[in-house]
Image 1 (cartoon, rainbow, N blue to C red):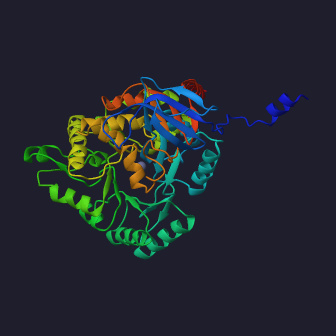
Image 2: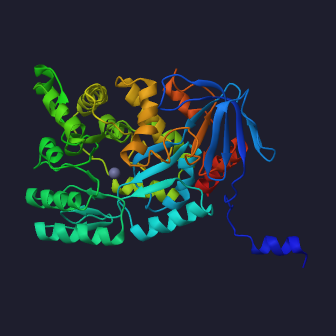
Image 3: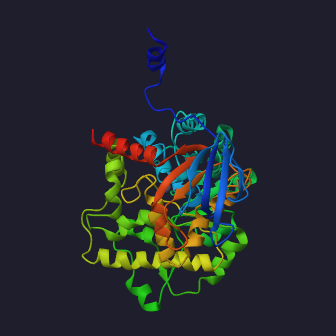
Length: 452
Ligand SMILES: [Zn+2]
């Protein structure tokens, strides 16, 4: 047997993405959350997993062994974060590459089998698996039974035991789900905070967001229980028409600015996940924007999503009219919260029908801008702010020397139009380059695998 044939035999069946190399992005416009205008004509040198140098192209030397990527007319941004996803689902492993292909080099996972996620993290770090950085809660704490990885807590004592078991697993943060008695929710929150865990949460109906914020909830997911500012007439007319539609929130004409000032004071962040609510707002309309990406999603995953997220069969005839009006209010609320100084992070609740892994984040950021954020603030919310929220700003979130090389090369300026975030030329994740050809191949292969 020849040596080449032997190497072929010994090679793993899948592709290996392990190689880092010295890379120089030359004459590129650098855009990150530190300044609201591009820095033109920059050279960015990547060595190993980190950004070694950023400087004017005229005066920055390119190492002899560097692979040069011509950045003329292009825009280099930090890798994007999707701050609310679920990776550990049927077909989820194969879908991890879709995040990276979409420029999402980091995700925050809010429920999943801890052993599975940590195994993936190891494979991703070694380069054997193409996927984003994953910050994860492991199983969430839940007050009743659900078919998703969770730790049950029906009493304050069980809440303590639950947090204890998560601490022993070594999870990155704690997530509280929905079906709690008040005292159990507060006990879990108190116990987790006393152990210095960040706590992401749903806010059950028995608890107000004010109480949750005052008790130290770090992030409110889906804007649950945050009221929507409405005129008195709207607060009468815009009442959810079927049970699931209540996630679109309650309309109120009361002054909400003291509540939002409280969020700022308490350091309570909000993860709106607007893109995931589109299906509820539009029901019973059959087509959704996210359907255009279904061809990339593994069949097992598509079937799972259809099963876990059933929509009602019979609903009042004006449900979609009310749904759209409520949804428009939720979009505006993001701008209201942002102007009030509340920290907003983009999350998609992927994988849902309208938020396929990776693809949904761009739509979420477009909705942020529709709600009144500038494209700069939307970009910042997906790069610098997640790094700050996660306490990782020393190593991620901006294009600066010493940081880990998670980068996206765009064909157009994201500050003039946030939808330019979809125009991806190349992605660098953890110092590994997914160039335009490799990215196109990856997406083609995902489509072929999904069709089989
Ligand atoms: Zn979720």
